[in-house]
Image (cartoon, rainbow over all chains, first blue to last red; front, top):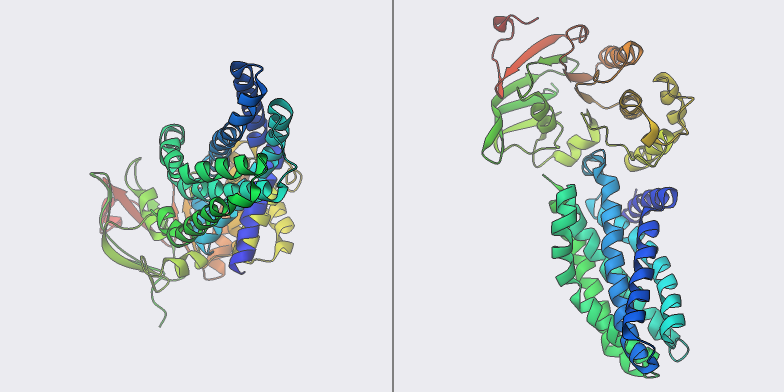
Length: 224
Length: 219
């Protein structure tokens, strides 16, 4: 089986588990919704302030949601030692990295669609000026978040590591995604989508680096 | 002449500072059924996990089916099935889906999934999520996975744990079938009533493989 086939097999398995249990969506969507409503209430009714802070709040919600989604994704591997089954399978271990990243990226995109809808309704975030820039920022940012989470999720197989170590590893590394995502979203929302090229380029570069590094080193991280 | 199924030379495995396997020397010929006995903490599981490449040796060298334990581990993994304490199943998938996933990863014939599930007595529960299974049922799925793969070397670590008599008989049938087909089995068990298909017995204590099993008074 090719690397692509192996990747799709791993991703398909993860998505099937998520669809069966709805663990990530069930935990993440209420969390993201609560976060945004709380921020909206604390910022008050001033529409300008809400619109200015909306891109940052949106990406913060996505970032925290991604942490929860990854904890769920790797919990399924840890429950009965299933990750060892992937280690012992005669497949390219990069397929495990790419497959898990692909599955979580798809889950996050679904979550983002809901979160963006909430933010648009609550904060009056404009989507009409540069929808492609906005979509590009979210797709590229999501790929970057998913790749970082997949790379480090394997280190957090034990429950204690998942709770304590995983966010410490992942949050600092996702800063470029957060910064570029917020800036590109802000530009798109304020009718300056044409100026977002450099931020989108940063997201592309980040994705390529993390996907490249992950593909190369994931097998070594998985080994004893 | 084909190299032995297992050859270990001075293999030591250390966890932190605690050695779980100490200078193990072992040779298992192809077609042998080796029974490994010993008390809790003797190092049986570590021995099987090192042979199955789930753990790498801290010191020493060895080969499995002619492939080096470290440099040839991918080749070893294609040919070896390790049935361990943890059954490595996905709880939110059914038994059938778990085996379908295994079959996709190993490039196996998915048409054999139903027959092997019947063989282990799980035909009726095959469509239920593993989360609702008892430990014995999970163990049967793991045995079904081993049957599906028909590996050249089968490593069984306490395969009878949690199984009823019927389930234990299923495991014994798997061992006998492997032996009849000339495949190699290494079996670690506490259960004194099982392992009768073994062609040789090894004894472990304190992380060491005793050199002569008969000298230890064990069959």
